[in-house]
Amino acid sequence: MTSRIPFYFLITLLVIAGTALSMYRHDVYGVPWTPGEERALWELEARIEFDAIGDPVKVSMAAPETQKGFTLIDESTSSPGYGVALIDTDKGRRAEWSIREATGKQILYYKTQMLVDDQASYTTEPPKGATVSVSLDNPQQTAATALLSQARNLSSDNITLTRELIKQFNDKTSQNASLLLNNLSREQAIINLLSLEGIHARIVGGLFLEDGRRRQSINPMVEVWDGEQWQLFDIKTGQEGRPDDVLVWNQQGHSMLDVIGGRNSNISFSIIAQDITPQQATREKVQAEDLLNFSIHSLPVEEQAMFKTIMLVPIGALVVVFLRIIVGLKTSGTFMPVLIAVAFVQTQLVTGILGFLLIVGTGLVIRSYLSRLNLLLVARISAVIITVIMIISVFTVVAFKIGLVEGLSITFFPMIILSWTIERMSILWEEEGAKEVLIQGGGSLLTAVLVYLAMTNGLVRHLTFNFIGIQLVILALILMLGNYTGYRLSELRRFKPLTED
Image (cartoon, rainbow, N blue to C red; front, side):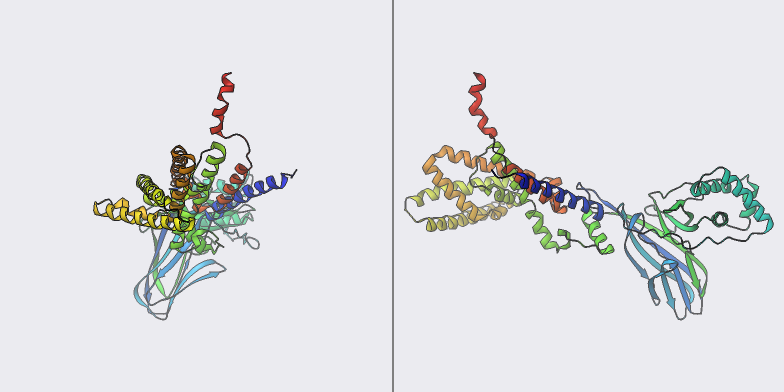
């Protein structure tokens, strides 16, 4: 007796591989499990204004990067007459504009698109070297020592110490905090005090995302190194962590904007939100991160449309296998209902059923005449094929003449399959009678309708098209059903008298 262990091992391997591929595509590429979901895409525009004084001009602006919750999709600049470069420096990514000479009012634009992405791929760079302690005069040093002493007593680590310092600087009754804020900004004072404690901290720019906002300013925030990653703090509210509606723009703690050869510089931001489909989001992310994409989405659109239908065929095969093996439904041909269901997808259900009945019914009448001629099988099948083509042509022309546009799609029916179906039903009629023809014909039509309903389900179409691993799971299910040797549901009626007795 042959061991079934390799068979069950194969089933398990297919299910694990299919599930792993689907999970990988969901986690890495961000493809959602259900259809209809949309991905948010933020389009941000930075507007730089300054007055040029007639000298060579060099403008350097901090550029955003892929970060937690956001993937950088695209970026561009609009700066007539300027040379532009997007470069990586020790100060992080920066956009630089340059021109030999400029005079008067100057306006430069930088645009970027950030995709909301929980699976964004980014790296966290730890601080380098030791902190640089700042020098303060005696009154400021005394105030700083008092603030640190109080915060140290109320904290347990770097994060809680930062939180307590922010609370003190937001306390309007604190004289020590007011003394330091006379000469320093709030964010710079917090950074200085943390450096006295040997804690790595830096100033970053936070941009609050709100659809339709214009001329928005960057908000200074503080990032503190906790030993594993940078923790963001809102110095106005003391809130810890990055909210979902905040994009960290200047991530390296350096200046947001440097202008050489100009004065009165200013930068403002405009924000627009838009929703895109998961397919477009996946395509944009693959291009942005240069991911190796073996999905159908990497093909041209024409081939994608073709595969969108082809990938539904295994679903039809699974339905047919279940109905034939488990239910015991009889059909004319094994997978003829699947091909008929594919035609139904193109013609719509009601039009497809009427067309199927008209073609098969008319074909059976003509086939009954051909049987009297005692033709050979090849010639008879060829004659039936030509007859089916003529029937489809006539029905299409008649439908067009009477204004039934839906009838034009009847040409999607597989002519060869219909010809063989007519031939098989005709032989079955002669050998088994009309009742068996109705049973198998009705079973084929019922199976085709059920396959059509499965193929047109939104969730099924989404999963089969976006997750290639689903095909392996379907294969495993079909193999499992093929191993079933028990009674079919339709056969249970034969044993009804035994239960009655």
